[in-house]
Image 1 (cartoon, rainbow, N blue to C red):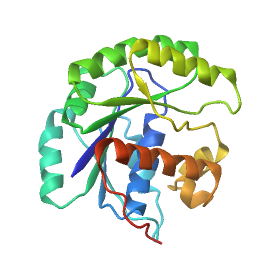
Image 2: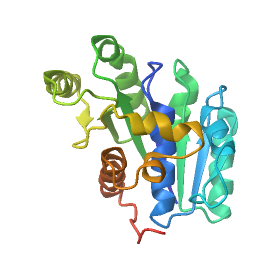
Image 3: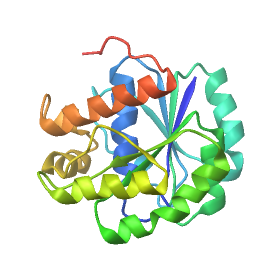
Image 4: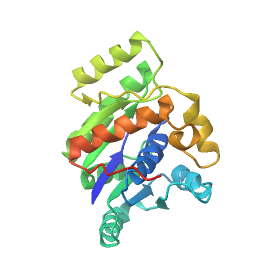
Length: 215
């Protein structure tokens, strides 16, 4: 079983959106997937409750951070292939626990100076966790120099930056309304393709399997 944690100490970075999309992407590639929501707001679980019959099968649950290790052991015993953990912002200890228990950490980042300035705390947390971590630019503007500038700032801080950028696309917003993701809302659209590429690159980083996609 592989565990992926999405962590950022800055609110509004898009952790829940990416966690939801990556969990469904894993399921679409044949992985039995569990989405664990550590955010008290429960955005990921609320989204899962809106999914319609016939959607790509995925399990979601709210979990108390203090019980995360037990939840992961139970998930492995139940035969899950992959667990995606959505964390809350401004929750140092919970995020640190999730990072330490994860095989890999993804750090969503928007291309703004306020978000960049807030990354020092997230970098320190990842260093404490001693787990491989990669920044993924999220909701990035299309064809803007600010994307390159953000990558340079993250490299200077000591982060690895994912080669796939997730751009600001309306498919992400529309899909979540009724419990879908971009690949279900607009198959083969640009938003869906970016998520697929992000998932594949994440798999390559942590030696996860990518199996044949389900219908």
